[in-house]
Amino acid sequence: MTTTIERWVQDWYGLTLHTDSDDVALHVSTTGMLAAAHAAGFTTALDHTDDILAAQLTGNGRGMIDTPVRLLAAARDLAWHSITAFAADAQKAGLASLPTGAGKVWRPVCVHERDIGPKLYPALAHTKRKGAPPRFTRKTAQRISDDLARQSGQRISLTFTGAELTVSHGKHTTVRPTQHEPDADGLYALGAGSLQWERAQP
Image (cartoon, rainbow, N blue to C red; front, side, top):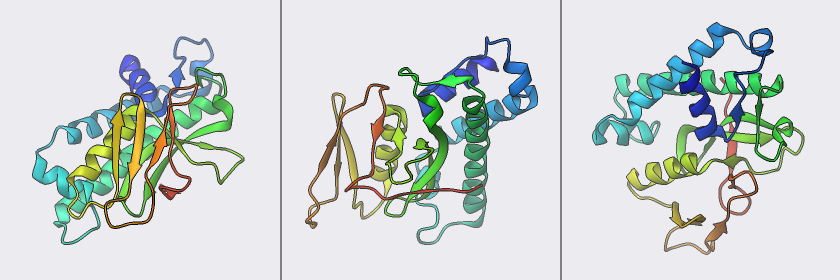
């Protein structure tokens, strides 16, 4: 369980979880960690679903969505909120950090973007500078790219060339592509001039 949630927090938030600290039991409950690990398992199972269901889950809220799919998408979002709450608690307690040590000013959150759809994505948001774009791990950015590629009438695309990430807005637009390099923590700040992220509330 510990190994699973450590890897999950690293892959999706870019944070190193210090579960070997003597203070873990004082600040993070075992039940909370177990809940986050189960939530991670649930979302992982959805990642391996068939393409037809994946397309509806990705476009959740757009067009005709079957009721069972809509409810499953809602459950997926709640699972992400569960994982995010655990990561935020650990970060607040000093049990999760970024490679540069700047973890305390960046808080785990869930965000969505209107042009992409209501699906949630894990990110780090600045605790004081509300206008700062959220930061994503490469794995999350790749997930956003894959989800966009599944959508019909795709208006935005994310493409990796090595470590560089390009955000494009389609052929019939005056918005120029933007290039993004990973920062010192290996994260991508996506937002200014390209994507307008909104923080989701559980």
